Amino acid sequence: MSPAIESEEHKALRSAVAALGKRYGRDYITRTVAEGRHPTELWAEAGKLGYLGVNLPEAHGGGGGGITELAIVLEELGAAGCPLLMLVVSPAICGTVIARFGTEEQKRTWLPGLADGTRTMAFGITEPDAGSNSHRITTTARRDGADWLLTGRKVFISGVDIADAVLIVGRTEDARTGRLKPCLFIVPPDAEGFQRRPIDMELNAAEKQFELVLDDVRLPADALVGDEDAGLLQLFAGLNPERIMTAAFAIGMGRHALGRAVEYARERTVWKTPIGAHQAIAHPLAQAHIDLELARLMTQKAAHLYDAGDDMGAGEAANMAKYAAAEACVKAVDQAVHTLGGNGLTREFGLASLITAARVARIAPVSREMILNYVSHQSLGLPKSY
Ligand SMILES: Cc1cc2nc3c(=O)[nH]c(=O)nc-3n(C[C@H](O)[C@H](O)[C@H](O)COP(=O)(O)OP(=O)(O)OC[C@H]3O[C@@H](n4cnc5c(N)ncnc54)[C@H](O)[C@@H]3O)c2cc1C
Image (cartoon, rainbow, N blue to C red):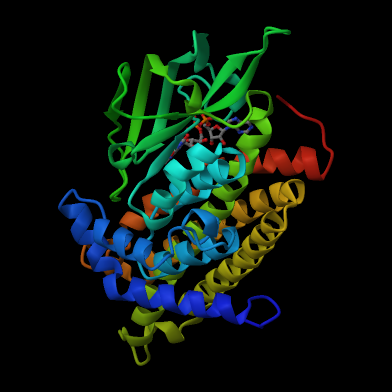
């Protein structure tokens, strides 16, 4: 990649993270999942090396970089076969929101741990009765003296079992208009009235998803992150990094699958030449490579705009990057599995389970259709059907 697109520092970060990922590799993740564990060794080592908190402020133990750098970390670990999903949530969403809008006390309490990986935070916005329409969320906080009481339900929340807290998106009632406005709360998972239930997902991943029930969970006043009246702005500050990081996650997974397929296609010979010499095998792999490169370029643009402080511009680019990366990943994985023939479906080669994993990037955190809706309305000015 030309130096104009990526600096020498970024290239050095890429190769250092890639080397770490290679030391662990896909087999490490496969083993930890089989043992029902989390990739704690890789997480801890990446934290110690400063990769997990590369986007967080130096004053609070981070690397002082941006989402550009954190996206490089996630992409390269993914390309090595060991994506760390919690990077999307813990330092990217929660770390960003706390660094930008938290009180000094919240920053001191959370950021150093999120940066070195000794603490993890999950993020909960999705609700069973709201889904893609987050304007419909009903988890509500009401004041009780100086405290808050939080009540509601969440679904598909990743990593609650390993989280020291969950950043929950709720609503408070506007005293003047009576309307509900979004607000963010730091909720400890051992709080009274907080229940979690694992969802039985057909995903071969260490990170589990949970349904949460919050029944009058009592929180101190300082559990509220930032300003009660600027909840939406604060929320969007966290959602753009989430999309950019999901794009990086998808590109990493797509590159991993493509790499395995190319390696196989160079060797496997059933006629005179390796199967990679047949254009029916080679061209779809070449297309997958092009699509992943294009998606990465859009991801770099989105990260660049976000890090430069252009939240609006980053919003459109982050959506487009997430869309492009998810589609490129789904296609790359599909073609990789096909390239291996029967071996594409064996556990030994470990590609078939990526078919389900790749779909996550198409659905979450915002689905393919909701991005197409966004671009139809926001970018093209077309009317809404809903
Ligand atoms: C593995 C995994 C991890 C996740 N982790 C988290 C997490 O940590 N925290 C969290 O808060 N959430 C998390 N989620 C939830 C995720 O963000 C949601 O699944 C996603 O936003 C979609 O919501 P839904 O599942 O309710 O689908 P729905 O909103 O019910 O949508 C179902 C289908 O209808 C389509 N659709 C809906 N509305 C429209 C429309 N207006 N026009 C066209 N099509 C439409 C959608 O595109 C989709 O295909 C996770 C999900 C998964 C699968």
